Amino acid sequence: MSAKDCGSHGQKRRRFFRRLCAAILVLAFIVLVVVLLVWAILQPNKPRFILQDATVYAFNLSTPNLLTSNFQVTLSARNPNDKIGIYYDRLDVYASYHSQQITLRTAIPPTYQGHKEINVWSPFIYGNEVPVAPYNSVALGQDQASGAVQLTIRIDGRVRWKVGTFISGRYHLYVRCPAYITFGTRTTGVIVGNNAIKYQLVTSCSVNV
Image (cartoon, rainbow, N blue to C red; front, side, top):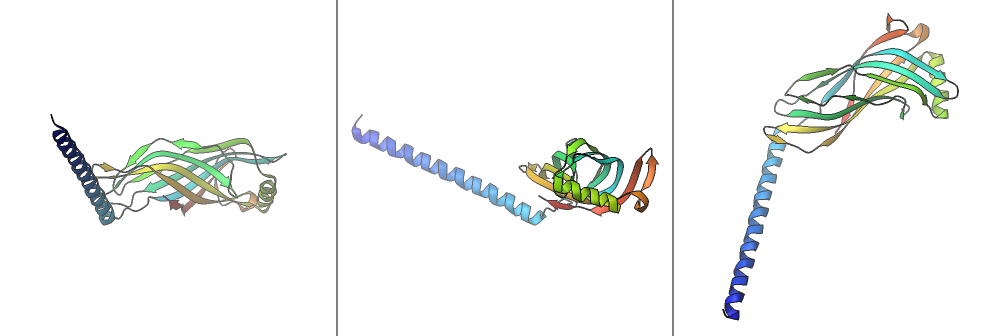
């Protein structure tokens, strides 16, 4: 075989691979455009969370700067989309005070939420002698003495969107729910057991994805 024939075969192979790569790129571009068009047409909305109530079993601040607390909270999540499902792959619930986490994280089992569906969870969140920053400990003691504490019930997790047979990648989910707890003679809760008080809150939560 002559050098001319080898050069001709080499050029053909290069042209073939260039055409193959171009075809793959065009196909990938078309798929991406279709997905983006479907996404834009469906206009996915974030899930909507509501903190329905909170039952306080313990909330004791001791020296030096240690907090023991035990809550049960009821949270509802609604999928507002009529053509998009939501996979909740991970949801961790905990409480914070002035941006400091004051309880352990409680995991909610992974679940799928269909179109327009509502899920309700009632996890316990607690912490035993959790160290509190000195400045937060002072503020918390003052709030308790005044009879009201503003907490935040937080949910951190990962979600995926389902459109038909297409399932998106994972997205971070951040939910923040204000919880206004009153103590002593100012309490607005209902006694439901020994040293347990239930507060009907029904507050909307901020949701970021």
